Image 1 (cartoon, rainbow, N blue to C red):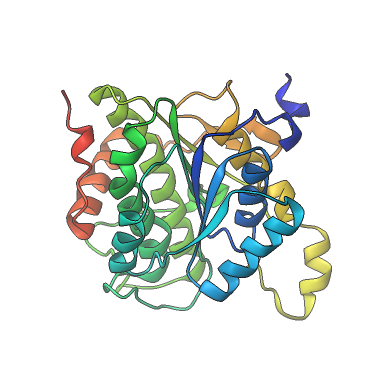
Image 2 (cartoon, helix red, strand yellow):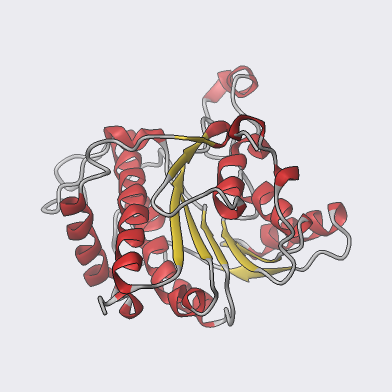
Length: 291
């Protein structure tokens, strides 16, 4: 099937598959979880706010009566919460690292990391590593990490991960999205070296009308020009389910392939980020030790 014509209706039957979607209570996470459930997957809606998470579960059940869907409370800005969530997942075929924050004032996570880097990258890095034993047990398991074309403007200074020398909302966001893409590509390299049957991909959803796209009095007008969350979810769903997807790829709007920036393709930078992230989070991906 031509990629240009791919829609969620093209998804295969996912009966028997188990999926986790982070940030599944809103934005592109909700239609991602909805379509996975519609096609038979057992979906864990991972949400920071349990009230909003339960409403997302109810909405999915209204649209797909009998869907296998449940709530999991997960705060990616708290490594303790990440560990508790991961401990409750007993089988997993698909992890969609979707949740994210953007363009916020300078803040820190519970563990003292700059908030956008800590939530968007370190939280997902830790979650993926903690869930890897479950993923490695399931043939053909996949990890999809939501990045952005904003990654091309990102820069990582390992001597200033707290951005003490200067904080910009957009530059911090771009850095976190660069880290997402570096991680997704490095995860595939390490899985390949270790002989682990895993596909790791990254996606760019396009500019989507989500909750963090707040633009003051012009918001109603601007939102008319943005993609709907359902449209923004297409790259994630394609990467998560299409038999044509290979590990290490980067998919964009319309389920079309994209090329990561030269910085994002740097194996040296990716390896350093991996080691620093493992040290900061205490999560070391033992299953990926080269055999």
